Length: 429
Ligand code: ZN
Image (cartoon, rainbow, N blue to C red; front, top):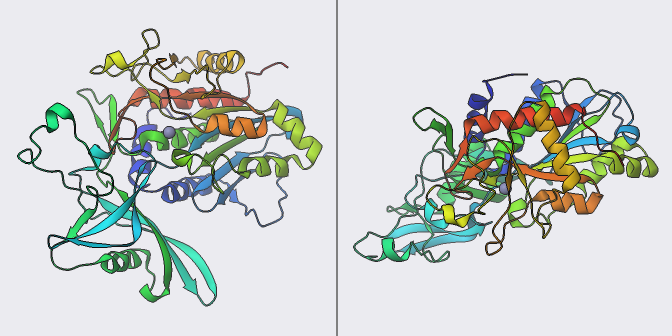
């Protein structure tokens, strides 16, 4: 297992993954380098024992696996689940607007970004183009890194109360992207995207454009113990999941990493955690309906997503007992209202994996007067009946355009997830 070399690779992954499709593309090329074969859902599958494979659905969700030396109905699968998407903005159709002689573009919200953090950043755009060749339409990706957009804040002199009353944002009227004082329109942005993807403008008949902050991720703090970057929730766990699978040695158990789009908008899409993507992959590996059900009942999933660290400057917002700190180790998330799947058995399972790998763990529970969010664990667990624990690494500023996490937590999470993937710990009954 690698030791201190995960962080440069993580930062490079974050920087080159402005959208969930790009994240999946980067992870797929890492899998290619490590001997995995891509299989398509539309083809017939014949994946043997101890084989490495992955499949991608709708460009932005991926399931990768290493089959075990034993049939999965006898061992179950060891699964890590995470999500590939993150909150932000997308350019609307017919987005051109002119305001006070500045050309701006209208945007739609995706998920729940902290809106104020997107103001006064050097923003750019990435996404996909639907390219038509003859009667066939295919998807091509593009990235622009030049800061072509701005969401500008009002000066203090016209919002005198901003520091006392808070920075209030109307998500429709205050967020259009400033991008030209010389008459450029959306079509110029589209031409830039076409150049980047190396496709002809007249072959493009559709597009998806996501706004992103191209400022690179970096280690910060006086001893480099923090990670400052965008998209930490939840690309860090996507990275950790794949690294843990790669670090696990040959095993009886089949290991799967399932990374879904659409978590930030409720998971109910064709490739979200609410879809049948994971179910169908497991059923095809199991080979028959009865084998599939036996496999589900023996499988164990770790659902990994960002966790809230106790905030030193807002410490009253946290439970008085559970106060997970950055670089204090991975967090088991607990919620009596079942927003998280962790229970007595599955929490003990993750804790045992952590002890075996020499890693400290922490717990998160929310205050009763401050309900928590949710994640993919409950969604996939409800669909499949797979025993699941919800975990994550402590972080600050979740859903900010620039989040904060801990360097040593990332290494620690990979160790624990690797122990999970090895299959050394089991649950009886
Ligand atoms: Zn998340």
